[in-house]
Image 1: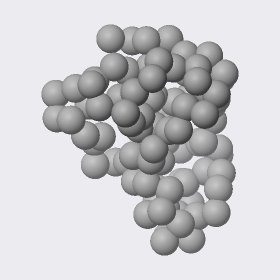
Image 2 (image 1 turned 45 degrees about the vertical axis):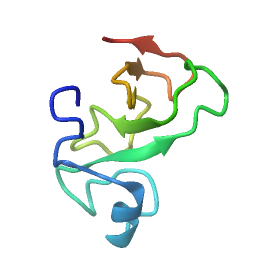
Image 3 (image 1 turned 60 degrees about the vertical axis):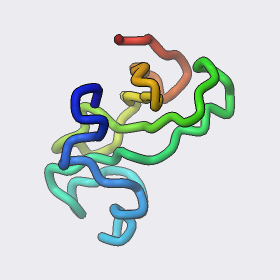
Length: 94
């Protein structure tokens, strides 16, 4: 993300996933090898510092039967945060 300013090609947005028939849960039956990523994270609860825009992506989900709770959230100014409890807590990783 920091080098290429975008997610790798194995990520698709929720809109793209829905166009494949996905309605939630595991993406594997609809797009094997793909993960959800590239959608805006709104930071409604203000758990992260203020930023003009945050993008979220699932991690550690390939082959899984759910999307799990692990996410990476990153800002346009290249601050990257990790959560393993579905947005309850974050740790800055860069």
